[in-house]
Image (cartoon, rainbow, N blue to C red):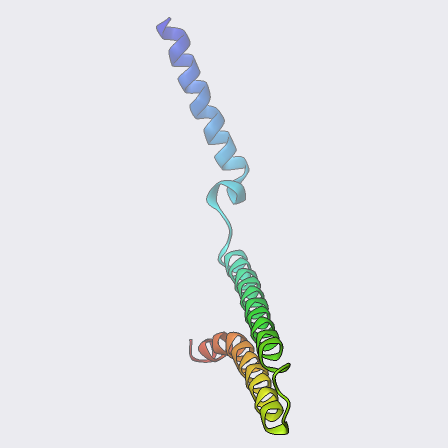
Length: 111
């Protein structure tokens, strides 16, 4: 019984050793270049998701302003206020999207 257990332990150690020696890339992990590329890819995905959220929120806010205030806007002054509000929303969406993409670039200049 003890011999079988000892042989199982030894065979497990030998198998683990052979695996480590024959496949070092799998066992030891990725290189620094691969990790950096994966992090860069993940950052781009996060930036894309944040940009999509900003555009979605801006679209919803713009439509809310148009639907809520435009039917009651009979005189030109009220219509002008609606158009200015929608223009502000569009400008803020563009600014937020630019910040999402430019901030990591500026950070990369100093690091």
